[in-house]
Image (cartoon, rainbow, N blue to C red):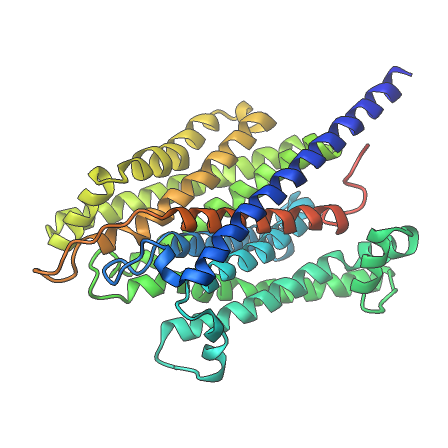
Amino acid sequence: MATQTQTVTGRLRGNRLRIVWYVLLIALLAIGAYGGYLRVTEGLRSTNLTSTVPWGAWVAFYIYFVGLSAGAFLVSTLSNVFEVEGMHEIEREALFVAVVSMIVALTFVMVDLGRMDRLWHPFAWRQPLSVLSWEVHAYALYVVVLSGELYFSMRGDLVATSETDDGLRGRIAGLLTLGRTDTSQEALETDRTWLKRLGIVGIPLAIVFVHGGTGNLFAVAAARSYWFSALFPVIFITSAVVSGMALIALLYVLRARLGGRTLDPALLERMAALFVGFVALDASLKVLEAFVGLYSLHPGDVETWLTIATGEMWWSFWLVMVGLGWVAPLVLLHRRDWRRRPTFVAAAGASVVLGVVGTRFNIVVPAQIEPALYGLPTGEYVPSTPEWLLSLGIVALGALLLTIGTELLPLVPRGETHD
C-alpha cells in the first residue's frame, strides 16, 4: 500500500512539473514571438548590429547549436559505429537532440539574414568557391542522415508501439513506420546495419563539413587574424563534442529523475569520464591558441585577446567560458565516485552546456570589435532587447520540440524504462 501511494504521489508530482514546464515554454514562445514581430517589422534596425559588427548574438547561438548537434551525433556514433559497451541506451536521445539542435541552429541563421525571403537562394544559385555555399548543402545532407539514423534506430520499437498503443503515440508510431511491420531478428539486424552505414557517412560529414566547416567560415577570414587559423575548426569540433556529451548526460539524469528511468552507474561514470576528458582537451587547445596569438605580438591577436579578457564582456570569458565551461565540471567530476553521482553529473553537464555559450560569444564578437585595418573605427556591440527576446523564443521552440519528441517517440529502448 505504501509503495502504491508513493507511486501515485510521484506521478502527480510529475504531472504538476509537466504542466509548469509547458506553461513556461509557452510564455517564452510568446516573448520570442514579440521579438520576432520586431525583427520582421523593423528589420535589422531592431538589433545592435552594424557594418563594423555584422555578426552578433544570433550567429553565436547558430554556431553553438550546430556544435551541439554535431557533438550529440558523435556521441551516438559511440554506440552505432564504434559499439562502445553500454552506450546503446542513449543513442536515440543523442540523435534526436542532434536533429532538434540543427532545426534551432538554422532558425537562428534565418532570422540573422537581412533578407529572410532569400533563404533558398544558395540552392538555386550555387557558388562552388564559397565556403558558406558548401555549408548550406552539407547541412541539408546532414539533416537527412540524422533523420535516417533516428528512424532505423527506432523502427523496431515504432512498430511495437503502433501495435500495442491505441493512443496518440500509437498513431504517430504507425505513421512513422512507413508501412513496415516486420520485427523479426533479421529485420532488426538490417536496421542496425543501415544505422551503422549512415553513422559512418555522418562522421566525416559532421567533422569536416558541419562543425569543422562552420569553423572554416571563420578560419578563412584572413582580415581577422584572431579567426585566421587552421586550429580554429579543430577547436570547434572539440567544443562540439564537449557540449553534446554534457547535454546528453544532463538529459539522461533528468529523465531518470522525472520519468521513472533506472540509472546505470557504469554508463553515468563512462559519460562523465568522456566529457571531462574532452573538457580538458578543449581547454588545452584554447590555451595553446591564446599562447600562439599573444606570443606572435600581432596587434589583431593581442588586442582581441585583451578585449576578450578585460573588455566590456569580460565576464563572458572568465565567469561563463572558463568558470562554467572548464573549472566547474573539472572540479565536480575530478573524483571517480563523484562521477557515479547523478546530481554531480547533471550539475557538471548543465555547467558545460552554459559555458560553451560563452565560448561561442567570445569567438564571434571580440574579433569584430577591433578594427581590421588601422584607422577604421573600433566596433561596439551588446545584444539588443529584441535580439535577446527572439533568442529566448527560438531556444524555447527547441526545448518544446525536444519535450514533445520525448513524450511521443520511443527514444528509450524497450526494456530500459521502469516504473
